[in-house]
Image (cartoon, rainbow, N blue to C red; front, side, top):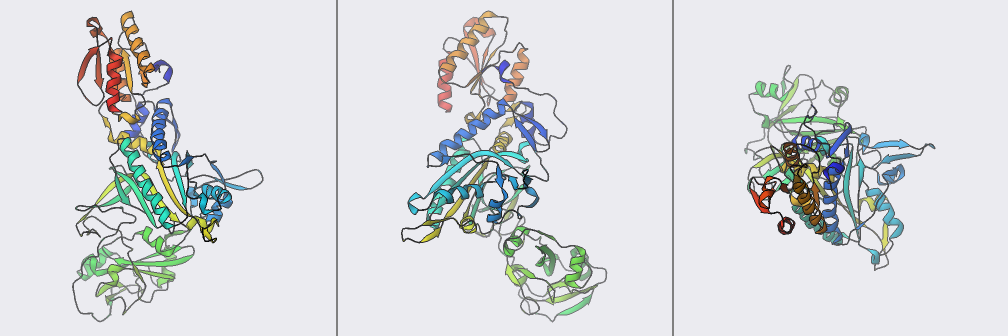
Length: 567
């Protein structure tokens, strides 16, 4: 490919709203251009990287019999209503109507569509497992698009689905895909971690995210400082803190007129946050849900929603709702005698002794409140883990780090097949529900993440496997016939050898060509210039400062051998 014909609009000036290095370099190198907030277009250079990532994905998963198809991005609402997700996905979904008033959405994901296709075509255990995938645009109305292609309203996703006859078969498909994702990310040159996660789908029995540690990541990870435990903070667990063994005291009402916050109460009672039972009130589909955690803890709303079950509308209760539930002003809520539809008690509260909590009476709190004697509720883990909490596996301290999700696999089990009535006839002549596994990689986010891990002061340093070109040839002086002819010969020879090669045939200054070459980050650069007088050309690798002079006559063969080593 010739640079002059490629359409690579490199940039020197960067828009002021660019926040992260990958976004800056994707713009500067001419990979993408922005149309609107959260909407980016892939230019030829960016698309070449995208296609190389897709090729790696296809090679890996087709090796285990996944077959490619392509679904429409336009999905009728009735499929989502069948699965129960039409309302639960809320404002994230782009919804529209046709001229007859029929409702559709632009697909944010495609579980429903694949499930519908399989139920139409598969009826017997003899046809299972079914393994299908696509690489297609997805659409989500992100509230805050940011970080370039990291979080957008329109993005490209690889999504695959396995349909199995039972849990054992699904587990085999699940483990198979874990290994394939490892292979994909290894081949892309990514350093990553596997973390326990929440699928976002109610009833999902297992879920793993492939995460890259990064300060720009929007996810928070809880990582053990000693063992292999790692989890998204949304679903992370920790050992309970130990409590002092003390006698149960007498419940006592205390007048606290000016103490509403935990900080106020700590000063009033001369006690630290772990002595308090903090009561937070939520609404969920019109009902009131009350959660009680220790005063030094935060509520993990993801765990709360899982405890509630399928919920479409969820959030903190308004001040008016709090007053209706407690009979008091905000700041005096507590679990004793509260008028709520569901009362969730964190296990640290259930195992604590003589806690201080709101009295559901303006200006008053209780001392010596104890679970079991003074209040009851559903006990579980409803707290958010934090730095220094004990690992649930080995009790070593947990670290909280930020990360970027680059891949997600999860089992939905029979969730979709039960909701959408997807059955097969078993060997025992019984109708059984299929088991579904889902596997996703955001390819444009993966591209940005690769750049976040591979750049220097001059530009991108692509891993060889996903570089837009393998080799770039730079003829320094286009007025020198020998330079031009030699560069063209090497270029043509490399093409005949099957090497993906770019020649910078622009009538530009040598310095401009070198700067653009470093910016774009092609792994191998051949410079044809003044050394040609001695029959030599310069070979340089992007990830090294070393330069090597090689025979101009044998340059193509030498480069081919070097590339064979990299491949």
